[in-house]
Image (cartoon, rainbow, N blue to C red; front, side, top):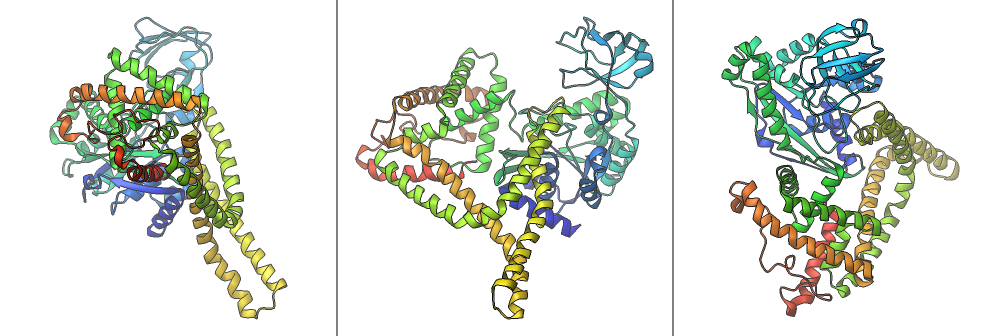
Length: 589
């Protein structure tokens, strides 16, 4: 087990450039714990959570479908995971057309055979809804009733619906209860499956039933604590990206709730499930769609002064506050108007082929400083590319094969899922799995080539002809890794050249973008100062970014001046601010 944990840790450290864990003080040192986390990166999520809990050992619930896979199953069994049969893995497509009654409780069928194909306790999955709906009774071949009404939608003559058989999870519950009884930890992804959406999927009730059921079945056990874990990825599917793992305060399942569960299982389960969802949402950023997420990220950049470097914790917390405000201000006409302008600004950026960070750099940079930084970064990027080039050429076949297979798997995953948008959640997993297979093969080929070349083309002594290939087995992996890491720095430097070039070669369209950004920036800050105190308790004490009334971010910069706070010191301040901006372009998540 220890060797396997070390191996997984090495894999994660290679794939991710930076893994930061915050809130680890919320992890109980002992006693039964259920970790609940969002699920946006398939098998990588489990590896990451398992590596972030310190000395605690976590038994993860894993889909039985994955548990039966050859490679994944071996790792899952070695980690003592608990297989779970999921209804969606054995879903079948129903025949005929469905129509929903006005009250949302009765389903009428045309050319259907409900009596033979559907049983009470099964679930129906309509092809455009995320939730599935439990069947209460089957009246006839063309009529059935649901246990819960389908509200807010109209369904008429719909095809492509699915039947999900009721699954007896008694064995799973007992396994989880025994684990908790022994004071160990269980890891659950309560959304039920991985996805690439910007918001959480509906939380399944199983996690609440496991916690309450364990304490009901074993009154002598310590209170179960449920710890929310937010896995906040910055480009989750990209190699050498970053991730922040945040643990929230634990939810203690107290005796009063367990006593209520004995007499009112539905009510107690619903209450605990609501608390779990709220706590999990407190550790991740959730938005209704991708465009909104991009707009909120842009607003966050506009709100944060360019000379302020946020910590990963502050960065994530600020994103969550913007997302929370977006959800609470749906009725605010002023906010919705600003959001529309922000979306228009982002559309304009895409049409011009630039990013908001590029415009921000143009807005803040003195052309003379930018000119010298441009050439300095160009030379540095060239040097790094030169140093990393040989290693990158050797690593390229592995990366190309892994990327190609991962993209094919993403297409397959999207086609087989009703909740995935592009299938991005499986990319990192398949890149890692493919690299673990192709990497050693490529390394063997390289070592063999070195051995052959040394044997045939040199007059070295026998011992040297043996030592060099053996030594290359040790040296090559480290050399390849650091070559890839250095190439990543070179790429970030290269990308940072564009805004510097725009600074001293500014065209009319870029001046237009600067004006748009400055106007939006002013509106964002004004609106935050008005609305934030209404949304966040004790905002003045808990605010993350403290805005100086004389900040260069709030005053409109002159065309040729970097720092309008102190015109007499513009050159010196320009170097400092541009250096800070350059550092941000390299390090920003």
